[in-house]
Length: 531
Ligand code: FAD
Ligand code: NAP
Image (cartoon, rainbow, N blue to C red):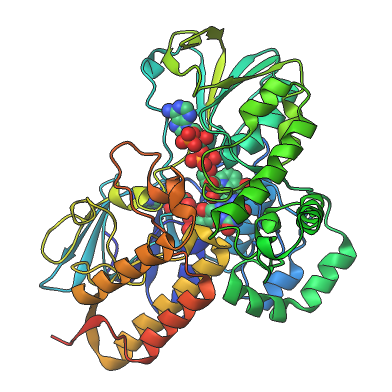
């Protein structure tokens, strides 16, 4: 058992690494447990072909250290997985964080000892660590999920999930491959796999809206100009997440020609910026439909076979209400002779067999199945741990009907436990590095505040938690986000309560609320002083 600590951090991705750096800088004894054998989080695990960020690299990076952001050179508009992982390795080495991390150790339980105000953290190796504070930096998209298809365990070929990709790669040459899932991961992997596999069958349950990435090498001049103005750009990002070109105009306020021209302009520029073409795309269904119609028209243009094009056109939910996907040659891939698209809504999968996938209409012999089937998002990594608070109640029981917390940061009955970019915070709806830095900075200030005041314990008042949960729900209800069966709502996990998980009110507003709470002496929190 290691000596008593001030803070235990669970996870060593973007969030865990920054937490270690920040808190050690405050003179705190801090240690992290990481299930993987190295740092990086999703960028360690997601090594599938085509994996890359879809927030531009110059923005999808830490802002806390100016020398780091000036010296690190990004090679592409959207960095590939291996480049982002190299960056995180560099961060771990540069700030000497590795000695603070136990690798290959999964936290299985964290129990609060109310008599001593201490968290007891146990790992799958049987190690126990004790600390005053626990920071759950375990990831919003880290609890991956295989599809619940009958017979999956009988498959005799290779079965892979995009989030647990073999580190030495996969050779698809000469192979018949099936990809299940057409979310962001599938959309990135499918064109790459199609290039090397002999045959590729794409099993699509729900088509997604895919905008082109227009990825390209990052011009030296652009990088230099960006770095010269980094302080300003980062300050803006703290208010909006990612610096998109946010329109202040309704889609209804312009002519059909002007609307089309604006969509076309953004389509040519590439990226998520497309969704911000008009300010009511995520609040007005008719406005949203104009964007959806534009994408449908592009799909019909890009895909040669009209029947395939229609299958690829998303319908029945608003554009952006499921996370918009950013792809490279995604729609064009369905023109390849070795690629077949199967619409699972028309012909559902019945079973996976030893060497094949059977739908209601056909049997596809395959050597490899790639599951791009996503995550138990935002809550999964937390509820997989046996977390027990002051009264011994498990977090998974407290959250059985949906997550309840205050500001997304803490939950009543679980004192001194902070959650990074979890439910109730902007989380996955914004550039997550901006959200991570905001959370870690707030947590660090809070821990310092407790130290200055001699307090031993902080947790939310139930009343503040109730109000916040309502605020999160109200913010979502005012948007079109609630009109799709998305992982934002837990709809991808059978039995998961249908609750909109992230806070949709924007990171600027959210930051202001968190700052006000801190400035007011942590209104809504119960702080216990001394013995
Ligand atoms: P993670 O990176 O998920 O790290 C959490 C770590 O905790 C993992 O290493 C995990 O092994 C560890 N862990 C979990 N549970 C335990 C446990 N019980 N014990 C020990 N260790 C544990 N966001 C964007 O803003 N822009 C993007 O372009 C973008 N692209 C993405 C692409 C992919 C393929 C994926 C999957 C996500 C992407 N995201 C993106 C979201 C991404 O989750 C965040 O950007 C960010 O990487 C999250 O960092 P994190 O440290 O919070 O979590
Ligand atoms: P996802 O968006 O949840 O997509 C999972 C896909 O699998 C969906 O198409 C889903 O269909 C399908 N699926 C799940 N279970 C199935 C089943 N039993 N049978 C058939 N199909 C099934 O997961 P993801 O693609 O891994 O992406 C998750 C999030 O990670 C993204 O939204 C994004 O935030 C992040 N990410 C970002 C990038 C990037 O571009 N930077 C890349 C990857 C991931 P339904 O829609 O019908 O449920």
